[in-house]
Image (tube, rainbow over all chains, first blue to last red; front, top):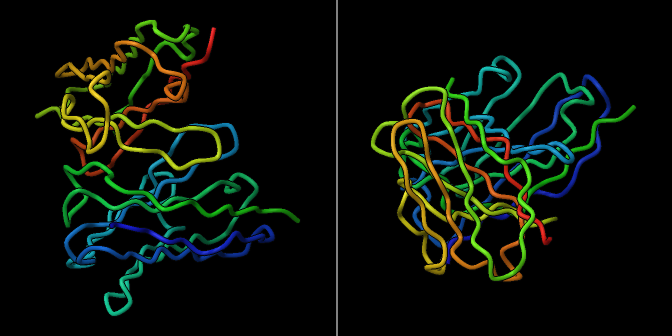
Length: 122
Length: 108
């Protein structure tokens, strides 16, 4: 069955960077894109952007443009999300999710990772 | 960016009652590129509906979705104890995917 296994929780200082991984299994990695969604404590879901696992095309949310980079490693069926210049506002649970097509445009999120808590604190 | 507004913010109902959740888009969402997710405390969201009215695998038929254009509805015909959760709508009409603010369905 489809599984998305995310990396462990992280604690970072303001100004640092964090890189979260999402290892996919149970399907052909390049068939379905990967989206990244975050959720601050007690808040709604926020889509950070997505990456086509087929050709590497990315689409980032307006709020995070310039601070986020999404990549993939086809050889290990793993997607990565790096967020730079962290502030306390970036404290959240970060989820990866598989799209219903290789390109996440016109695609909902089928399967979700378990989430990775990133805490930004001095 | 398409903004999704969900209402009500909180719905207080008893098991067995009918729940009607609304999601309004700031511009038309064509081809019903609208999904609904359920999230319980401490868990990842779970896909319920896609294409406005298509049920995801394993979702019971007490869940139904409808709507088009800018107005969409998720209906739970008879609430079961496991249905009390937060529900989010999401549009995928534009390449910038967005979620609504969520509706919490709580036990009255």
